Every structure is written in C-alpha cells, then in structure tokens.
Length: 157
Image (cartoon, rainbow, N blue to C red; front, side, top):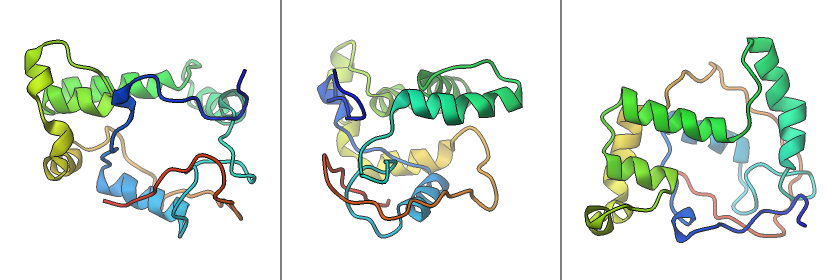
C-alpha cells in the first residue's frame, strides 16, 4: 500500500505535456517560484499531499460554502471534458490527448497532435479554462520545499 507517494501512471497516454492557458501558466509560475524540480503541490518534506487530506480539509469545505454537492478529483476531469466538448470548438483529437484518452480507431492512431505543441498552445489559449480566475490570483505560500523524490520538470509555455 502506498501512502503519500505518487501512483505510477497507468498507461503510456499519462506521459504527456500539459498545455495550459496562459493565465493558468502564470498562476502556477507564481506558485512554483524558482523551483525547477519536485512536485508542484507537495508537503514541506517534498512528498505529494494525501488525496483524502486535500478532499477533507480543502475541497469539501469550499464546496459546502458554495452550496455544491461533495465530489472528488474526477469532477475536474468531467468538467474539463464537458467544457471542451460542448462549449468550445476544440478538436476531438486534442481533447482526447489532453484528457489522456487512447484512440478508438485508425484515425486516432494516425493523429499526430502529440507532436504539434505550437497548435496545442494556440488552442489552449483560444478555448480558455471555463471559468474566471480570481483577480488578483490567490497563491498560497510553499515555504522551503526540497527537491527530493520523484521529480517532475517544471516549465512555462
């Protein structure tokens, strides 16, 4: 049983570049600061936060204040899919790539969207995020975060 350790990705589609809207990239850059490795969101010891702690201490109280039924992290994925599919002109192949879904037919197999970072960034900026970020952005302080453990390269678009 793993506790406060990251689960290894289940499929090859989990290994991908995440294309962010410029406003989200700016918000995350402010949060990350000058760190170049490690988890983006981690404990003071550099370990990933436990999912149940984040749900219980952060997400569920916020949802309660907003009058929204409790949900888990998958709700963010469902929201992103619904927003991209129904409220934007995001190409299906790109939406599938962003959500980490595998292809269902030969057309998906031949789709090379994974290799076209310039196009993906343009579409990410055009389609938006589906909600407004607070102005000024709320960026929690991180403190001294070591860069040990499994590391992820942090880059800005």
